[in-house]
Length: 93
Image (tube, rainbow, N blue to C red; front, side, top):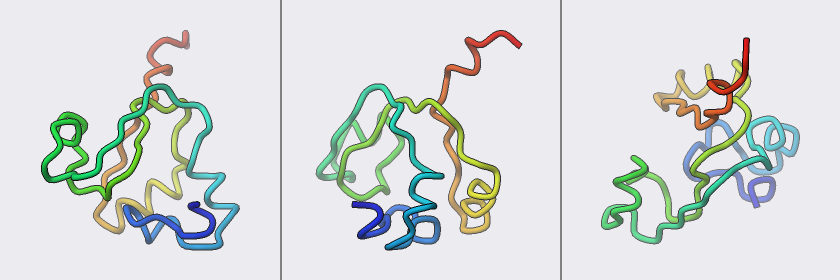
């Protein structure tokens, strides 16, 4: 879907027909899922801090981090990167 349509949440990062970038900025390794239909009325959206996101399904935790160049793109467009990977805290240095 992201390859075909891009992303309404981050259109400056995921534009339609950019297969390579979709694989760079998404991960098949995630735990937990929340779905929301009315972000402005949803307690789940408030709990997750996603009240401004479009209706849809969202991962609670993602393994992996976004490459630096894509984090910079988010920052340049006024979006904040939320690292949902808590496995790094469990890995020994």
